[in-house]
Length: 165
Length: 134
Image (spheres, chains in turn red, yellow):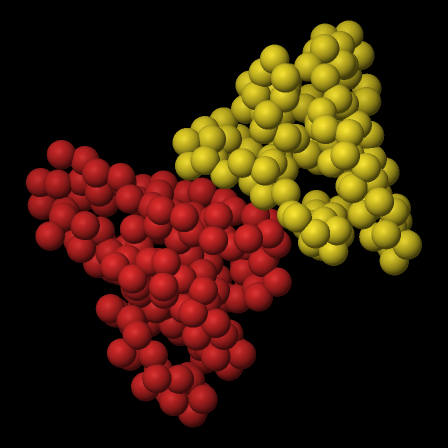
């Protein structure tokens, strides 16, 4: 049995959404930054016991100034992955902005927060305080590094497992 | 930077033209736009003289073109070795999952929803220049 699910990535520009998508879909990483305009799509089948979940990842342009209506990009999402950069306090604080955009429209969608770029920095006090605020908003909070691969597959697998429960 | 826009809607062309001249006023190297409005015109360039196509930095295409669709245009464009590396970007007002998946399956570089406001159109043009201009 194979099911397909739409997953949307949300977060500020340059927090590593595309790197996370590339790490997940192709197991690759590039130091070269290329901003996403609009949306990019990635796809990978996750095997869970005898079931398969085809995750279609919508890597959506980052930043508060999202061009055009963001709701059109998020429409029909089954899972939402929020991404921040732990070395960038603003990106951590802005998570609540993205959460507010989608919380009413997708109350049942599983929501995961990725604390990305764990390889670059220790958690600042601001980051630790923000985490306390966010822990009740998300189903899971996971430390990731798209560069080393830390936590990336685990995050998507966790999301996929929710779809076959 | 050279951008070829495949677009049949004159109003959309007019908005982009204005947005480009607005953005160009802040740029040291200008964006030069070329427009193709029909499938016939596109086929003519593809079949008879590809010099215009070859010098483009990106192709910005609508998804809905009378007589065909954007993905079919992209497929015929990317058949040519000299053109295959030119980024083909969709700039459209529809966002159907199947269409987006199909676009990426066949080699789209980006998929952008047409903005409603003039300011957002300027932002798109600026962003395209940042990402693909150098």
